[in-house]
Image (cartoon, chains in turn brown, red):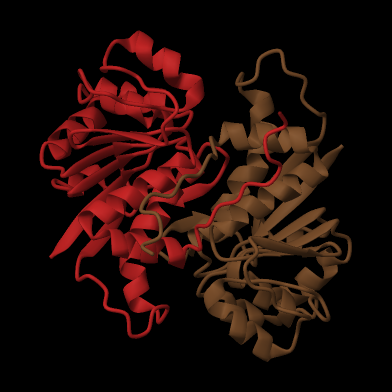
Length: 210
Length: 210
């Protein structure tokens, strides 16, 4: 069985917001195609990852990267995992009723409904965060509280799970969130292989200047 | 003064290999344009980041992302920072004498010459790693040693600096390496602001199953 993951793209989406989870989720199948772990038994789950937007025309991300989506929303009527990234283009999506309708429709059948950074505002606009514990980028926590479209807005977590809704903190926190999701839909062992494939042993330089 | 950073793109480049450093370096100027740190004094350095390939036609990355470079190599004759990412398309670049010539030419004037993952094989093919301490993705360490095109190949480091050459370990290690470079060309304080902007406080789930 192949699970279907979809990552929403839109004009001025933040680059790492969507590429972090994309790399994590795409590595789940990739590590089966490359001989990185010879002789190791790997769980059989398959994961297909699509980059989904209103149309498949090229769009320009927040920092200037130009990318082509792999699928239009009209061609996707069901997903197991939806990832909604953030970026300075979030306002535009919140005002786009067609995309919000599509999100509501696929969210209905999703095992996991997720956001990265301020992507949670899109899920909130779609009415999918009512009463739910959530998080977002540190600079957007107060703004999210003011919408009154969610339950408690939590600070200090890389990602927050409430039922099948998983919202993550800013930008790179989406990598940790996606690894956690990968471990839930495959196995923690498989998630560790994804982590090794990405050599994700982070050690940020310049420790806090305290 | 605006420093010029260039990230090499090619068919089957790994997505996170180049987007990690791109996000880090692009955030250096981005945090000046968004009101994330009101009232904070920020060092004056400017950093322009281009995604550079043989041509600006769209290319397909390792996991299927289709992107458009922002600049062709023919239009770039000088850089302060060169980032050479890796991916399954590295062999193709190693056999492409025109790109290797361009790398040699710009490397000559670079303050920092860097690679992510198996991108170091491209720098090695260009003759720029002779006698230098280097690193690469864990799965490619032995293969790199066998080329005899470098000095000692080190294991267990996120990135290795030898003179102005900085080579990083696999995929996501490029984020740490780029943060370090950003701190060198601006200031450690500025690098910490970039880290905060990206909310890069990594905490991978599923601790090692020991």
